[in-house]
Length: 185
Image (cartoon, rainbow, N blue to C red; front, side, top):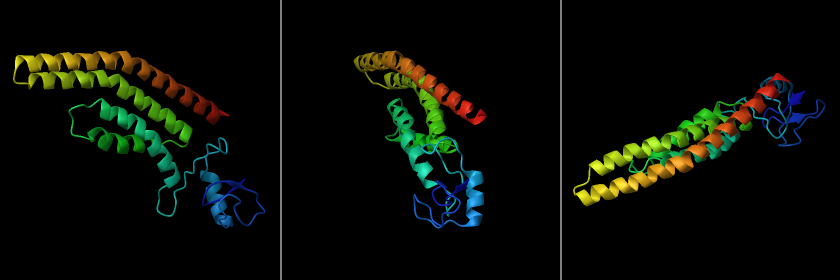
């Protein structure tokens, strides 16, 4: 099989140009590209060979888009933190973790796992926030209001966060099982 060194699409061996991107096909790049393309299906291929600058930007952009979900959830689970801290910490971290996966499908599975972890930790983060915020108020009424509000947030995080976290965990398991079955074939 011959693959385009620019976009990674499978190209007939006798074609001088890639039908997908128009890149000229030469012998050396076909050998290296064919050894680095993960072949699951044409819609799920991710090209492990980096571009001229060393980064596969198409894969990076898709993973970054998927990484927004756990990053936004982390931001919501960190009330009282410096504005945007969850995104500033989460987006690069989750993008890096997803970028290590060979396909978008496995990246989605990995990031679903980390999203489940964030959901599982959100009640704990809210408990910590409630204790700090309620303890830092001046009057008894403010402390009681902060404690009641914090309790409502924590209960909501348990009622919503734990079941949704379980759902994301099961989703991540499903994608890792499917990927392992694909690799074994």
